Image 1: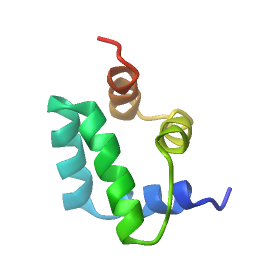
Image 2: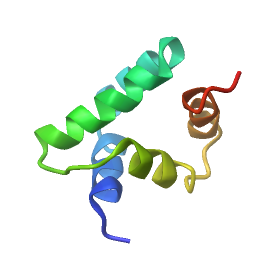
Image 3: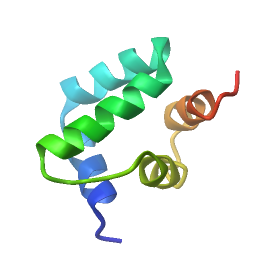
Image 4: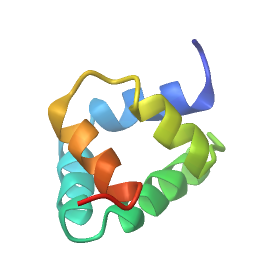
Length: 76
Protein backbone atom coordinates (compact mmCIF):
# COMPACT_ATOMS: atom_id res chain seq x y z
CA UNK A 1 0.00 0.00 0.00
CA UNK A 2 1.41 3.37 -0.96
CA UNK A 3 -1.54 5.59 -0.10
CA UNK A 4 -1.59 9.05 1.42
CA UNK A 5 -2.85 7.67 4.71
CA UNK A 6 0.07 5.26 4.93
CA UNK A 7 2.57 8.03 4.13
CA UNK A 8 0.91 10.25 6.72
CA UNK A 9 1.02 7.50 9.35
CA UNK A 10 4.74 6.96 8.72
CA UNK A 11 5.40 10.69 8.99
CA UNK A 12 3.57 10.92 12.32
CA UNK A 13 5.11 7.69 13.65
CA UNK A 14 8.60 8.99 12.89
CA UNK A 15 7.98 12.28 14.74
CA UNK A 16 7.99 11.38 18.44
CA UNK A 17 6.73 14.76 19.69
CA UNK A 18 3.90 14.92 17.15
CA UNK A 19 2.88 11.33 17.92
CA UNK A 20 2.86 11.96 21.68
CA UNK A 21 0.85 15.15 21.19
CA UNK A 22 -1.76 13.21 19.20
CA UNK A 23 -2.01 10.58 21.94
CA UNK A 24 -2.51 13.32 24.56
CA UNK A 25 -5.26 14.85 22.44
CA UNK A 26 -6.81 11.40 21.95
CA UNK A 27 -6.99 10.78 25.69
CA UNK A 28 -9.28 13.77 26.14
CA UNK A 29 -11.07 13.89 22.81
CA UNK A 30 -10.40 11.10 20.30
CA UNK A 31 -12.39 12.79 17.55
CA UNK A 32 -10.25 15.92 17.86
CA UNK A 33 -7.16 13.76 17.40
CA UNK A 34 -8.67 12.36 14.21
CA UNK A 35 -9.33 15.89 12.97
CA UNK A 36 -5.75 16.86 13.85
CA UNK A 37 -4.42 13.91 11.81
CA UNK A 38 -6.40 15.14 8.83
CA UNK A 39 -5.04 18.68 9.36
CA UNK A 40 -1.48 17.36 9.41
CA UNK A 41 -2.21 15.55 6.15
CA UNK A 42 -3.47 18.78 4.59
CA UNK A 43 -0.32 20.62 5.71
CA UNK A 44 1.79 17.94 4.02
CA UNK A 45 -0.42 17.83 0.92
CA UNK A 46 -1.46 14.28 1.84
CA UNK A 47 -5.23 14.48 1.60
CA UNK A 48 -7.02 11.81 3.63
CA UNK A 49 -10.55 11.30 4.91
CA UNK A 50 -11.63 10.30 8.40
CA UNK A 51 -12.78 6.94 7.08
CA UNK A 52 -9.44 6.30 5.40
CA UNK A 53 -7.57 7.11 8.60
CA UNK A 54 -9.80 4.93 10.78
CA UNK A 55 -9.69 2.07 8.28
CA UNK A 56 -5.90 2.22 7.98
CA UNK A 57 -5.34 2.49 11.72
CA UNK A 58 -7.54 -0.56 12.27
CA UNK A 59 -4.89 -2.58 10.41
CA UNK A 60 -2.16 -1.49 12.86
CA UNK A 61 -1.34 -4.08 15.54
CA UNK A 62 -0.84 -1.65 18.42
CA UNK A 63 -2.92 -1.76 21.60
CA UNK A 64 -2.89 2.03 22.13
CA UNK A 65 -4.09 2.61 18.58
CA UNK A 66 -6.82 -0.01 18.92
CA UNK A 67 -8.07 1.55 22.17
CA UNK A 68 -8.13 4.99 20.57
CA UNK A 69 -10.09 3.63 17.60
CA UNK A 70 -12.71 2.16 19.92
CA UNK A 71 -13.11 5.60 21.50
CA UNK A 72 -13.29 7.35 18.09
CA UNK A 73 -16.04 4.99 17.02
CA UNK A 74 -18.06 5.95 20.09
CA UNK A 75 -17.20 3.08 22.40
CA UNK A 76 -16.12 3.18 26.03
